[in-house]
Length: 354
Image 1 (tube, rainbow, N blue to C red):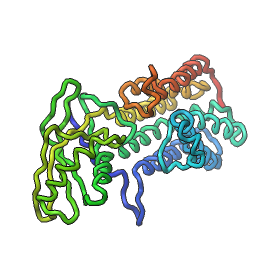
Image 2 (spheres, rainbow, N blue to C red; image 1 turned 180 degrees about the vertical axis):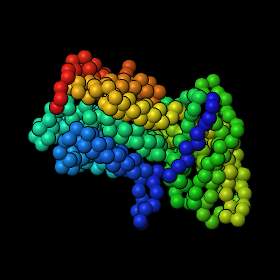
Image 3 (cartoon, rainbow, N blue to C red; image 1 turned 60 degrees about the horizontal axis):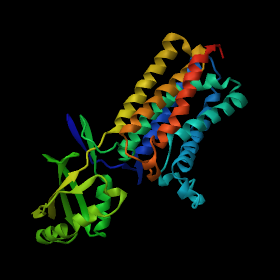
Image 4 (spheres, helix red, strand yellow; image 1 turned 120 degrees about the vertical axis):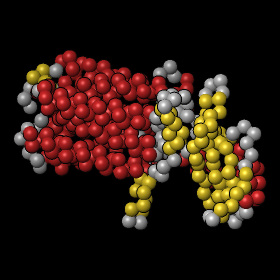
């Protein structure tokens, strides 16, 4: 093990009186940079710059709508078929990159043939360069959100995500808890399956002295963390640990040991891979002239992105219950036809000027 990252970071920042989520910020950054990238391509190839506005609208709309519908139909149709009105509630979470991929291709077909009067593969060969860039930022948004993380494992670099556990503890104390903070220690709790990093949790209650804080923590914290909840997957009680009460200038609090569940930081692995693919595609476009081989860059993108996606899924936490009975998970099954499509496009690509 090289490092254990205790990921205890807010998923939003206050801006002008409202909370800007880092996930939304990553989306904004990706689309702004993508727009600059496509403007460069349009200028380089003498394409009418007025087409940029419509391209951005179609890309943004296709990405959001497709990703949402992909999650609904590929991962959670059992729920949404009985809650049709929630399908468009994107703010409740649930986006799938495979749905975005399909939607973007359909949108670019429409934009290319009806608006730009270009071959669809001309558009796709260029748009995937900035899509790969955006994919890295979106995975960083998942990192800030403490979601789509890896399976429990001891690896060279591992992460303990505590945000959901904090929310579970706060809810469990029914509004009596002012704050809960976590600190790393050098200690490791070894078991046959995993070595768990030991954390120190500090629980600050409203209007309790140190003795009362200690008693309240010892009585209820273990019950809260062992309750059946998806938020209780990253923190575990330390066996036979007891809390101690303290007082300082900020008031009274209780301190107790907990176990953090170590996980692969798959969001970082994916972000790094997608940015590498972006650099590869950009260099291929700028240096080798394969941008004139219609479908080659698009095919390279499909093989690289969804080939890596197939591989990294082996290290991810199962996202929905029905995947537990599958030999390959949904993300892997959806990646296979996209990789094969990419191989076909690369093998059949031919020289074209537009």
